[in-house]
Image (cartoon, rainbow, N blue to C red; front, side, top):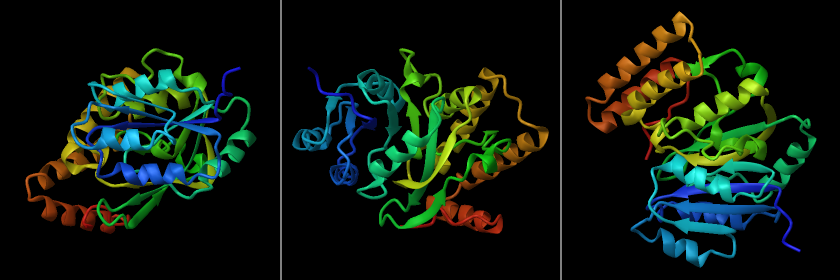
Length: 282
């Protein structure tokens, strides 16, 4: 008989991630539960990423390294390999909060209703170099439902979200038309069918600096979000559209400045709006 399917599949896409991947390796190696598998799809890295993967095959269920068309192409490949009932995506450099995190999350997944397809917790954002905690994001769905964020309905943070295997039946669950925001497209479609379930757990720690968190890519993200809204027949209220236009205009002006100056000013704006600083660290 073959080995029983794991409860959770953890998926990571990598590309020249050798400087960051050890954090993720250590985090998964320390998990007290063994009811998970880790699948890594590497985009033909030219640094030491593949050496790290070879050295840690005892904690990796499956890995491949070959050219791809970006993170969502890699995720689509990994989803076809996944055997778990639930899937979570960790970036290279992301960590689970504690050695007991997956065991704790499994209890919540077991308690979720039979028709639940998206179960999420909280994510702690870290500064990119010193990995200092900056902000914890993730609140109960009742506090998010009906609200808008960056021009689309508010969503759980994807890096702290478990998605049921039934959502991945398509050959290409992540739409490659949206190279930065396809996870938003995926979650919006899933949540349209079934409301997500919140669990009061700090699930992951993730350093700032990912492509969707950069000021330099905010305009492209904004364009993709507008295209996603159109694709799904979503019409943001006028106030949301005006706020988003103002936000992107300010970011466009900030991007004309040196990066350190832009980050300082961006954090001043965040503080004035009652939000914690996010950019001017390390």
